Amino acid sequence: MKLSELLANIETSGPIEDREIRNMTCDSRQVGQGDVFVCIAGGTADGHDFARKALEQGAAAVVCQRDLGIPGQILTPDTRKAYSRMAANFYGNPSKKLRLIGVTGTKGKSTVATLIKAVLMAAGKKVGLIGTIQNEIGDKIIPADKTTPDALELESLYADMVKEGCEYCVMEVSSHALDQNRIGDSHYEVAVFTNLSHEHLDYHKTMENYFEAKAKLFSICDTAVINADDPYGQRLLSQCACPALAFSMKEGRAGLRAFDVQHHPDSVDFRFCYEGVEGKLKFAMPGDFSVRNALAAMGACLQLGVCLDTITGALRTVAGVRGRNEIIPTGRDFTVICDYAHSPDSIENILSSLKETVHGRLVALFGCGGDRDRTKRPLMGAAAAAYADFVYVTSDNPRTEDPEAIIQEILPGVEGRGVPYAVIPDRREAIFQAIRDAKPGDTIVLCGKGHEDYQVIGHEKRHFDEREIVAEALAALN
Figure 1 (spheres, rainbow, N blue to C red):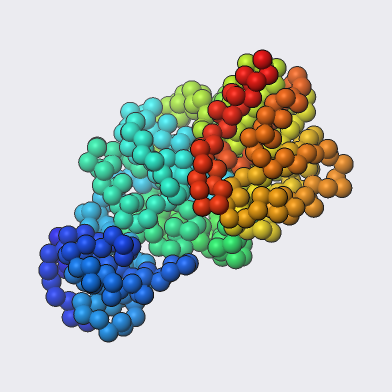
Figure 2: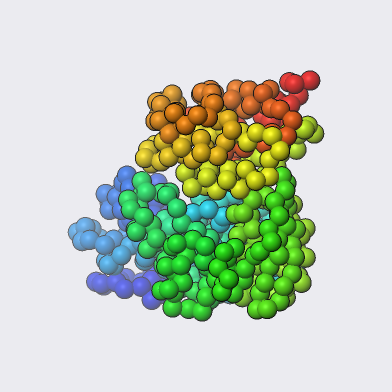
């Protein structure tokens, strides 16, 4: 590819010597002969500091947003934006050949994206998925490191989807990706908003910044599907410039609404109404939030023109989503659920919903991540204590923090609320103890790890799959 082609539709200044380009990167460690290095200022390092090193390694050009006084530099006002557009150019702008569906919000993104893909596949379409749990091209699974990948990886995934014959791409769109311009020129046929709650404030600093980042998605879509039960969803509905379908369990004027909800330990039944047409759905994931996730997926697929019978038929057959309100089989007279809940609101949501379904005690087991927002730790403790009948306070991903120090910041939210609790820093031992103590009819909710099959201790990622640990604990009972 020529340098001029790579820089097409990107604002630059200064003379550009056109030449053949081998590759592009924003990581100076990956620069090779004939590559373009893009200088991006990150949270811990600034790519501009590595520009000369990139030239020494053979870079054909350096794209920067301040004058570095080096040969081969190309100035642009915003290197993040330039990098995303260059990535799209590098792969031939593959997103223009796909019908994109974007899902954003604090909770529910993975579930909603997975449900939309399931419906579209039931409609006979070939679909790609980009998300937190994994990336998918049809039935092919590709590991994922972050919710929305780096711009170059994103465009590579788009290109692979086009090559494999995908018509649609359903993707989780994170607030970080929107704020950092990582999605380039991606334009979405449908954008879905699930909810917004206390999360990622270590990055965004305020809820207003967090909301504004999420709201960017709804300026680059044709139609929107928005949760009218969420205060930020109501705000988004009032300012959204594109046509929007509101879904709700409360708002009678919403275009798509659920009512007559019947809760069960392993599922939920509800009736729904869309444009005067009523139906009934049995959905194999319990809780009110599962009803809203199902409505979000229904709304997106309706906006895409999928018929209602196909949508409900597909949703009735979905067994669940890994690590999202996932029921781990026990063969016993108690239930174990694995969920990714790792914020005050997400813990409150899952426990308050399940409270209506349990026949015995509702038991919560959770910890808080290290090197992350410390202000939510006592709030998570308070949320667990507000709904659970017993709480196990343990570790999540402590990273470089002392697990016991993290627990000490959780406990003020638990103590003094009249709820019995136990502190067991070793998460494996905490799960074993919860299984040993389980009584008939109990529901044990393992909060925080969800789809993750590892635990980060220090800088080391250790294998830790809660499904395996539950199986080991059950076997130990024998």
